[in-house]
Image (cartoon, rainbow, N blue to C red):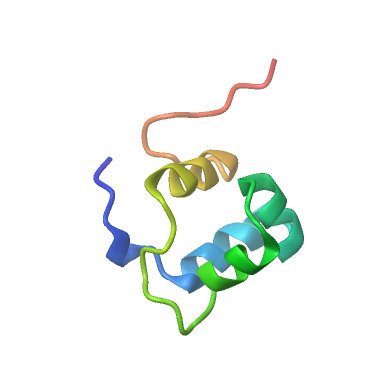
Amino acid sequence: MHFDKSMITPEKLKELRDQLGYSNHEMAQVLGISDQTWLNKISAKSNSGKISKLEYEFLLLLVNQHPKYKIKKM
């Protein structure tokens, strides 16, 4: 999977959050970041690509959209 930061917009991050059914606070907790850091990532004022590749791939795994990997329930 090629990581293209230009494709990761605040709208895409909000979409992933909404697919998970999480609040902004819950998303921050899942990613292990502060609420304000998460809000900065989804701010329309922010530049695209403020999320790391690891964070983005983790979100894709959680919503079952990662192109290579799936989470298997035990």
